[in-house]
Figure 1 (cartoon, rainbow, N blue to C red):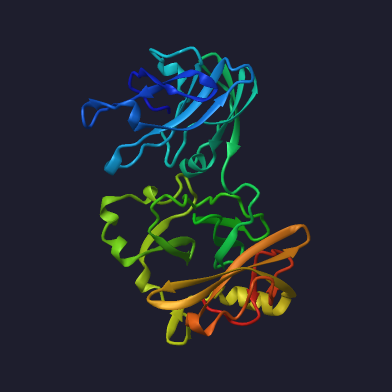
Figure 2 (cartoon, rainbow, N blue to C red):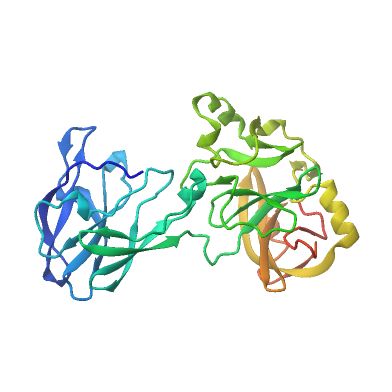
Length: 356
């Protein structure tokens, strides 16, 4: 599944750290049918082995107004300046998103630890490959990497399936979107098992909800017209067990109204409301972030909050429409009251009916 790479040619580089002359790959720009110069190659990282015999160089190609390429890394002897072979370049998988090996640190003179992002593998529905590889005589120990590690997911919304046995959950970490379906008592997967994308990826999906045993994905109205150019698998993970339908976001009924706004409340689900009203445990959550946004030409304050149940921490948010000059209702560190489900603590709702 690796990309086939064009033959690389090398030009001597400028003087660099440790006063060593390092070779940089000058790629052929096939679409413009000309060779790039050293000035087009931007080096972002150089990692020398402990004995300085080898170096891992990470760089990208700057096409000016045409944009930049993804980063690539070459491992070479510091004495090499010409004829860098393809075998010296850390390979990339032919997957969605950035899926190249990326250097972390040297473990010894012959072993380089490299990162490989798990997210593209999840998206493609294939097992993550953590096998070590050898590049230019250097063993590369592979460790999984994703920006969701060590972070608490921000839960946007969730909904019971009609039989109340499963949950549909939307969540993110750093501007990405993940949508997963789990059994009622299961743990939320770190990466979405229905949809996963990255902050830099195009994502037209605004909302998702159950439709019987299928899933409706609501897209912005101006994106619906583009669906004929794409397939479902351009947006969602492959090999999932559910039928996904694309629906116009404007056809989604609003369930709550305040200050002239129509909103979808964070957890507007009659089954969840009934569960929490009957069995919910009251606890305080702490405001962890306050921001101000313009949404649909309306001004609003945006709040993140966290709460802990046992050893687990959960994070979510709510929005209140309010002019900036009137000031925020909460500050970081303030407490709000919530109800959570003791069986599945990520299920919760704020005591006050804050809008979304």
